[in-house]
Length: 260
Image (cartoon, rainbow, N blue to C red):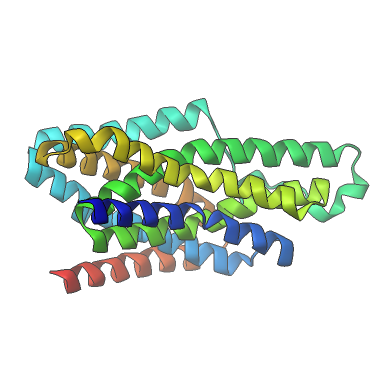
């Protein structure tokens, strides 16, 4: 159990700290191409949608029954909705903000960009907390599925890191500040995983795990439908976004079939 818990915590940490990759991207290319972003975010959403319905919710139904599992599923979605309403956050692509390298043309843009970066870091950090719990619970139940979920979360954490570091770097010119704020927003995921391990493991049994997996499925579906897929389409590459979704579902389906 201890080795499985350590592996689940490691996966959560790696997925969360993928935000630092986005931070480095902000220093190098400022903003990745829309085709790449559209496909990769769609791919990540496809993986998370398929594994939520085919694996996580199904496992919850097997463990605690259809009605209880679906209540937990919609409870997870409701929890993410309330979190999203109370602490909203935006990707740069959603805001259609002015280009960050034009700050000399707008009075006070540095302050605006700095506030944007800090608020995005706070919002993403709080939103990343339940993602860490999701990765931990999934990996504890099935390490192979946990790896797939961690990869999917890591992929969508890269543009989150970009969304935090790009405005802070543009406003301050400090790579160190931009990197650390991006790092802090991502470290919320392993913190969430550690909290899950601390409070849930003493009570973990088949019923509790079933409730948790079904709730995680709801969280994943909400993240995919509310964040990943809309942002993927916001890049203007509609065919690539749907191609990414289908490809992600196909890859996830094939990997699950190989594990049978």
